Image (cartoon, rainbow, N blue to C red; front, side):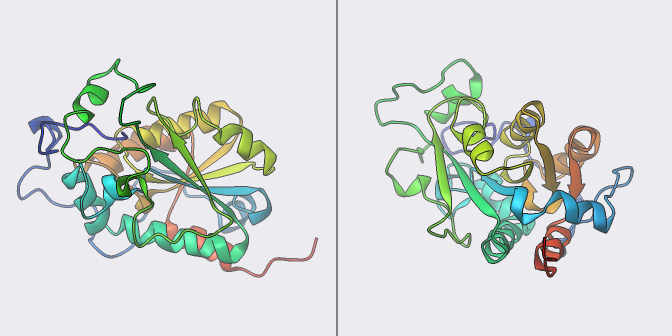
Length: 253
């Protein structure tokens, strides 16, 4: 799982819960802008980075049991929906299909018998007690609406660990696709998203993060994490900026 589960009802420990009445870091519906102090790439720089020929779009744990209506983590699912992140991810996936960008959906699941599952962290042990479990073959591990899944998309499933890259097929697939840039979207900004970005950078890829297409809890944690951590290693942008790049006419090579 990419976020820290709490008790049996899927609520987060008090320290991880949004403060009642706290000001939202972004409007509910409008696309977020990169935060103050975060370098913004030039249009030409971003266009070159997210060239469809060398770019892969990764959705992280955008599955029904995590961000869907019947989520094991309702607080995370609510933030993903009300912030607009889930809708923006769906728009990015649809645009990737149109532009010829390869899409990978990274799903976290476990066998009903638990074989191979990690148990060396509080997060893993707590996930076993949640009312909705991410079991192989169940509806919980299907890609959540409204994200479209095309025949050419690949769904990469992992039974262990925190990262959608480490210990999975993703790196080999990216190299086979000729990928240079990985656009990272999804949940959660608490765990799986930074893991994916760090692993991508360590493996030699350029990581691009549309900051309004990721979500975590509490809601105001995400912009702080982006500003203070991800901006040091990844290109921080918005979903609309990436969409604009993919909608531009491609010059003949």
